View 1 (spheres, rainbow, N blue to C red):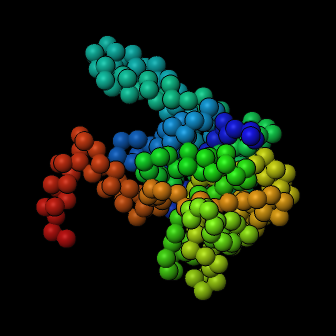
View 2: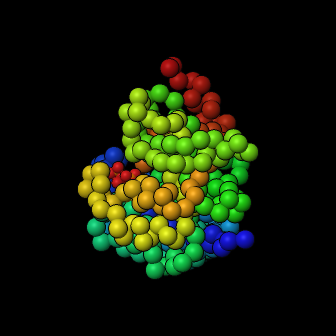
View 3: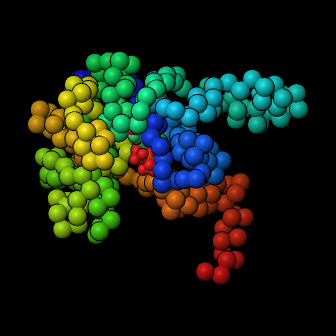
Length: 291
Ligand code: UTP
């Protein structure tokens, strides 16, 4: 048996330009989906998957992320004084969620660079990466699903979803073939970043959940800026493929791109409908709309 995945890296150093002007001051990761910042969904998923240590990559203007996962002494004291015990438990629960460390990315030089910033804290062991703006609704947490593949197969694992038609051009896309023993596993031989539909090597689009071996750090260090002048994680994974096995895994569940306006709206509707305290009223409201 190889080493266990104990740490998860959350790159949150990006500028979130797709959500301007909301993200001029508020980090994208702190935008609320119903009543929780989107990054908290990812943190809860990591914990539910057995992760022990969370490493969040922040940057300028991202201080509210640290405050959110810290004790809020004044708020807690006020809620206690007013006897609002349920809300107090919610507030305290957030800060008790996990062991979290922060690393500052001095400049948003790309997702690959953000992951490289975690090198010292991760050390020489396999680790997970969670992109916080991908919010996933799944019976078994998506990260847990790919950690199980890692345990069985031993190579890096990228969560994927099947994307039909032109929409594939928004993703990194896997080349390779379906595993003969497990139709959800994809034996990866290459990957193409944002291909035209006609050039896409498969329908398997990479989403924001990865388990990577520590070899990726040395490869990231050698990666020169690619598309958009940024150090791309996919470029380093392509180099990793030449040395080690890399698998895709078609996860079970539904992913929302909450870093995008339409994705956030879709997630809001679906998550609100599932809530026992909001769902029935919200459903009645939606039914009453003349669409
Ligand atoms: P995105 O491309 O979705 O995020 O990166 P962005 O650049 O913040 O957003 P837009 O496209 O301008 O709206 C995926 C993840 O990688 C992080 C982002 O914070 C996001 O969680 N990231 C990106 C970094 O941590 N550092 C970077 O230099 C770039």
